[in-house]
Length: 114
Length: 112
Image: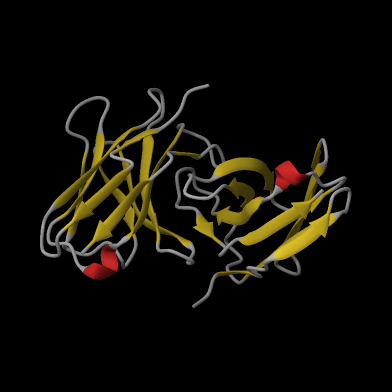
């Protein structure tokens, strides 16, 4: 069964450093998403990406964050200057075009900011 | 504004019990309603989805949506220890590709 792949599974970084989280969505999917889940909290929407541009973003997704699809397979989330409160699980998801329910999530990257 | 509310539990039941999990929501624009299962430190995995109001059954699982009350439910019949996980409700609007909005999740433990 096709799956969304995320790397690394766990990243530890110093406060103020830049991190890049990587995702390989399912190959025929056209919508891509980043969500985060702070320990004990809800899964929260960060950003969606379609047709090589951001289609929707939440108020969490401020200027510290950026997304990119550098080639035909990867989808990345960059956090420019990490803060302690950025520590969370970050999930990538993808969705087929013309679907409203078939979101497939990766296993996540656990980001720890120290 | 808390768009989706879900009692986080934990909920503990014996094997074979019927489990009822519920969410309420405030945004009447939600049209697609999903239940995800999440194991510790893993990504959410889609269990069931429903469009608009009504019931949907899949094996031991039944999803119900009551749009007039803005209330959705997931029932698990003959619960098994392997059903122990966190169950997340999630919702999205009519337009394809819109973001999923999640509830906080209910942690279920089924003891043998």
